[in-house]
Image 1 (tube, rainbow, N blue to C red):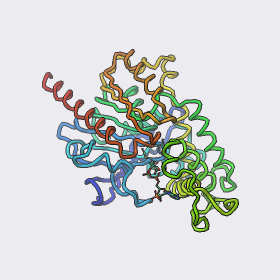
Image 2: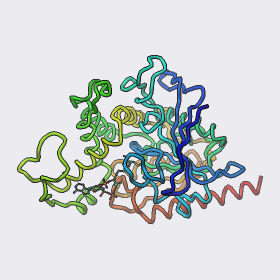
Image 3: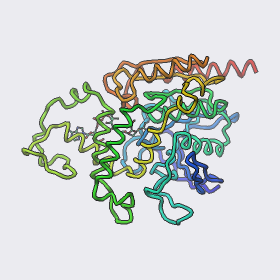
Image 4: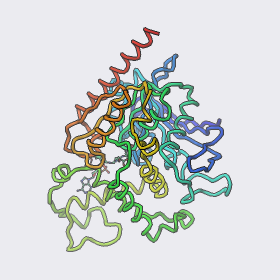
Length: 396
Ligand SMILES: CC(=O)SCCNC(=O)CCNC(=O)[C@H](O)C(C)(C)COP(=O)(O)OP(=O)(O)OC[C@H]1O[C@@H](n2cnc3c(N)ncnc32)[C@H](O)[C@@H]1OP(=O)(O)O
Ligand SMILES: N[C@@H](CCO)C(=O)O
C-alpha cells in the first residue's frame, strides 16, 4: 500500500494528514470495480495500545478531512475545530480521531478527478454512481488499514449521520457507539428535489461541457455557485436569515461580491443577496462540480428501510451499538420528525438508543456552530459510552 504523509502543521491539535492507496480497489454497488482506491484522511490524538479509542468522524456533503486544522484551500479552521481537540467534547487527549474525505470527493480520495485505470484519463462525469454503502466500505478499508477492529464511535452530521447509520447497519460488530446528528434514515422527496435543482443549475452552465469541463480548461462556476446559493438557504432558517440580514440593503453594491452573470437590477441589492453570492463564489473555489453531482446522488439513493424489506428496524436488529440521535428544532431540511422515525425503529429493534432535540433557531447547519447544549450532548454521550465500555471490559 502506498502512503504519502504531509507534514504536521501546528495550527490545531497535533494531527497527521495522509493519503493511502488501498490494495484491491473497491467493488461498488453498481457493479463497477474501482481498480484503485485512494483515501485522504486526517488523524488526531493517539491510538491506544489496545486500539479501542478510535472515533471516526464522518463529514457532510461538502465537508472534507480537514476536521480540526486549517483548510489548505480556504485558510479557515477545520469545520469542527470547536468540537475536536484537547479537552474539547471530542477529546483528542483521550481519543484517536479519524476523518477521511468521502469516496467521490475532491480533496484527495478517489473521485471524479481521479484517473480511470481503463482509459488512463480522469473519470470526470463518467465516475460511476456510488452509494452511502460504497462510501462506508471505502472508510472500512481505511479503518482496516489503520489496524482498528472496532470503532469506539462513529459520529457525523447530515450526510455524516447517514454514514454513521450505514456503519451501524453494515458493520454492527465494528461500532460500539454511533451518533447520527441532524440526519435521516432516508433522503426525503423534498431533499431530492433541492438536489435536483442544484444539479440542473450545473447542467445549464455553458461551461459544463457534459462534465468534461476540465478538458476545456473551464469550470461550471455559475452553475455550481447557484447550486450552492440555493442549497445554502436550506442549511439556515428564516429566523437566522432575518436576524443576520433582515431586509437591509447593501449600499456599497458596486463593491459587493459580483453576481456570477447579471448585474443587480436597479443598482442595489439586499445584504442577503450579497451573502448568498459570497457563499456561492467561495464554494466554487473549493469544490468540484462532478463531485457535487456524485455525492448528492449518493444522498438521494439513501433509504435504509427500503433496503431492508421496508422496515427500518431490520438493519438494527441484534445491534449492540449504543445510539444517540440528535436533531435541531429549526432544521427543516432534516427535521426532528425524521429523527423520531429513526428512534422509533431503533426502539423496535431493541437497540440502546437515546434522543436529544437541541433547541436552536439556526437551522440545519446549527451542528457546525457554537451550540453549548449540543457540545454537552456530545461530551455526555461519549463519556457515558466510555463508562459502559469500561464496565464491559471489567466484566470480560
Ligand atoms: C460537516 C461538514 O462536513 S462541514 C461542511 C462544509 N462546510 C460548510 O458548509 C461551511 C460553510 N457554511 C457556512 O459557513 C455556514 O454559513 C455556516 C452556517 C456553517 C456558518 O455560519 P456563520 O459562522 O454564522 O457564518 P455566516 O453564515 O455568517 O457566513 C460568514 C461568511 O459570509 C460572509 N458574509 C456575511 N455577510 C455578508 C454579506 N452581507 N455580503 C457578503 N458576504 C457576507 C462573511 O464575510 C463570511 O465570509 P467567509 O466565510 O468567507 O469568511
Ligand atoms: N453545510 C454542510 C451541511 C450540509 O448538509 C455542507 O455543506 O456539507
